[in-house]
Length: 474
Image 1 (cartoon, rainbow, N blue to C red):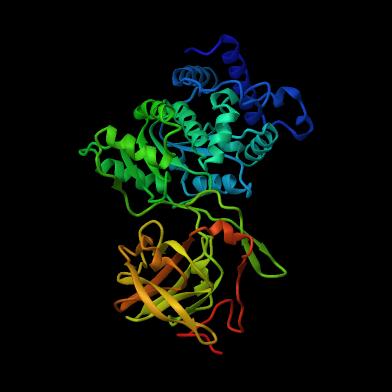
Image 2 (cartoon, rainbow, N blue to C red):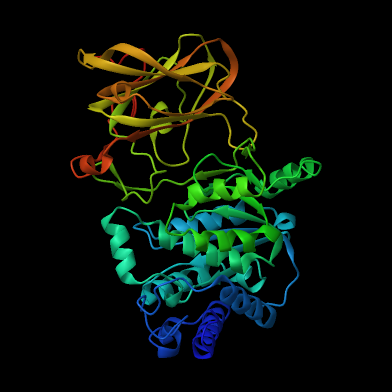
């Protein structure tokens, strides 16, 4: 069904207001102007339509807007991000900073960053636009950064959303958000890269992707994956985006996005995933630090890809230097532990303050881009039955081996993940040269029930914020 003329006209005017607001950097003193408040609709009402707006309406609207407002040359790659308000409002800004800093000036000429601000609160939307337009005005004026916002009547009714929330399902809006994003991105570039709004990008990721695409010219593909985490780092041909957007609108109630994308890939005759290493994108996990207590409290979890890392102490018998300490491998930022010349039997062990029920463990070693200084032979073990003071685990069981310096292992046996007190990374062969242990991430079962009673704590000793030696001195 075609949208009513009046609704299309209102939506078009709304997009125009948003674009002018961004490019002209509307000053603070006119923030209360009612025209600006009319961004993408006259009021924040999600009850106007019971079904999402048909794809052809979105395509006609976005194509006409793009043709009339943004006359620009087609780039090689569009990075698409759909962003919703988060407890840490800086996540999107940090993601954009990482994208542009990771790209050279030459690479940026081949890049368009498209952000769908999927906010339902117009006040929050306006604040976000103001912050982005202030920090990234050169990129916006150069056409390297585009901001869009879907009309409220593109979404299901609030009754449907409440039913989903009651059943613990929140993916309908996410699917529609991304359908709108992909619909707009269709004619911007040759390729489309899907990211999230809390991402750290590897340096020169565009060059790495371009090299991989060139190596795949003789092999037809639908989807290349530059990350193994959910929807992060998924590369598509832009010519496939209309079909993908339509597919998401057809099944937006059925499954979350990270499960619909593999189905779409198989429908287009790519049976197996194509995983591209090294991974170029990682989630940025934010936490707040209180200077007076040295406690770090993780922000509320955005999605199941964010680890929990329950509080604990770090022990190691590897060499420790004055920078990049062992505990940095267990933080939720981009810090890491650096050592060198490790021997078989060396370990880095996390001893949890309280036994935890773990559902997944991820260990990352080596540099992000080229995998240098990775642990060549290693394994991860789970420990139980702690004793002594300070505590140490009396029994361990093997969880998995590292492959190319990484391990991302679900704990399938509940009895194995139950009451875990230690997670130990063990070196299995002598290794000469540097070693980077970048991250040890732990996911808990039913972690939400434990969050209120727990907080991050960095335990300090006279030697620093970690314990050194096979076990810490008493």
